Length: 113
Length: 112
Image (cartoon, rainbow over all chains, first blue to last red):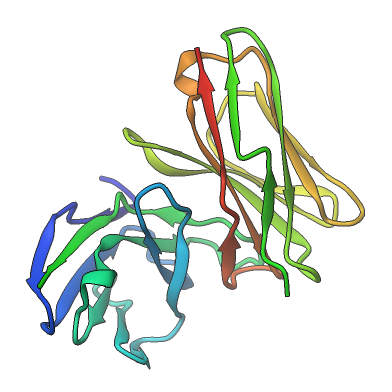
């Protein structure tokens, strides 16, 4: 079983719709969770981070964390063609004060006009 | 604040050679982590340096090594290059630990 799993997609949504991206992780002791966006040929760009159970909203983005189910999700409201990219879920399995991210394979999102 | 910078941006090497990549973190950040990204394996953690000490290491062979200087700049070295080392090498800058990391633009290495 992979440590961080994502559906590779592509996830295709029409412009203006809600895109829902999901991620599960295997290490129950994981402390912090991140969503990065990566455009083709570019480096990952931080979108959201979440540490506590529940929802966290930032503009059109909402991250949801359920530690009991070991599940993280990212909702993108009012999706735009410029949101078309690969979305990477990352987990810091430690919490002991070090920086190590375990990444999922990424979900490719395509927003069509 | 300036972002994370990496040099060089592109490199072409041949098998058996060695390569050194450089990363300058965001000002004030003392943690530098290195990652390898390939189409087949995705993004994989190589190692992390904090205050000139390697604090964590991924599952890569000893040909991959790194160091960090007192100004937090970091270098990684790959010796005896193999074709499979062709990848995008990313460094990420962060604070003490467990918090957000910001990626540089990456160094694209091609091994022929």
